[in-house]
Amino acid sequence: MVRADSLSAELSTVLGRSSSVFTSRWTTQGTLYSMSSFSLGDTLWKPHLMRKRLLLPVGVVLAPMVGLLAELLWVVHRQLPSLEELDASGVLDPGGTQHPPLRLVVMGDSSLTGPGLTHADEIWLRQALREVDIGRPTEIVSFAAGGSRVCDVRRAVDRAIADGGDIAVVAGGSNDAIHGTVTSQFERDLDGALQRLLECFTVVAIANVGDLGNIARVPPPLDQVLRRRSRAICRAIERVAARHPGAVLIDVTPADSSFKDPAIFADDLFHPGPVGHSVWAAAAAPALKEAVARASAQASRIESAAG
Image 1 (cartoon, rainbow, N blue to C red):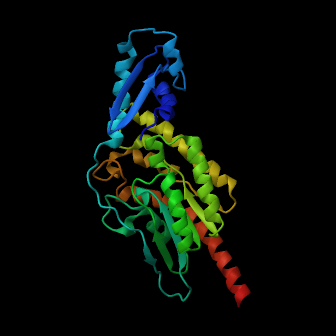
Image 2 (image 1 turned 135 degrees about the horizontal axis):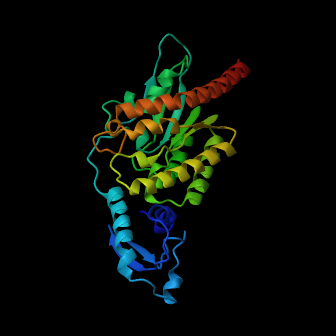
Image 3 (image 1 turned 135 degrees about the vertical axis):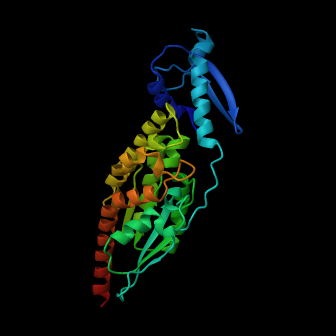
């Protein structure tokens, strides 16, 4: 669901300031969206104003606003071309070592399931791990699912803890940005999930969110709305990671410039294709190297104490 209250500020900035006030309601896919007495110069919906005044003709502002918001809902909710999701789970074995595998438990959205890819080895996480000289096999257990939001990640935490491992990897937030999850609520939920994971995992590697305004299928001015939303979610992720010493931030924003090329996307012009995942992998490798080093050091300490 796209929440009107979380998009109003972004739409205000994109469309410009106006003192015009209007009331509009419409239903999209069973959800009622109400824009009551909304001033384009404000950052909040103000239904009480409508009881006090009626200014310029409704159509002056109604048409562009309804058109823009309806288009945003359509872009977000319309049926995407069917692309098969992949499972990143499996063992990456460099060979020539007798060490037990390093175990990664993964939660998140379609960035970890690779719609549009042909093989799980193309998923950015697997590519990045192959670039890191781990010196031991790596086992990936994935609970990722396309469309996941922070609420889904929180539900996956119990499964991740029950399964156990050395490193937890969390990659999400794009769907929260697109569907209008209130940023403050997103931050609280993510913080709670991270805190619980760090009680059971040596380290949690958490990916931020790139510039969603670059998504090839999203036309102007909606790209500006999503650009602002994704930046807000990205900053929230970075604040959460900074609060927890056991967290390692996977910064994918250096890849943003590459995503200005529509050719980097899969056939649905929404999910990254093989080149996009390779760019993500290059951006993610340094943080994953740090996470692996921390987890390996902890494993060595445990082995030494036991031996």
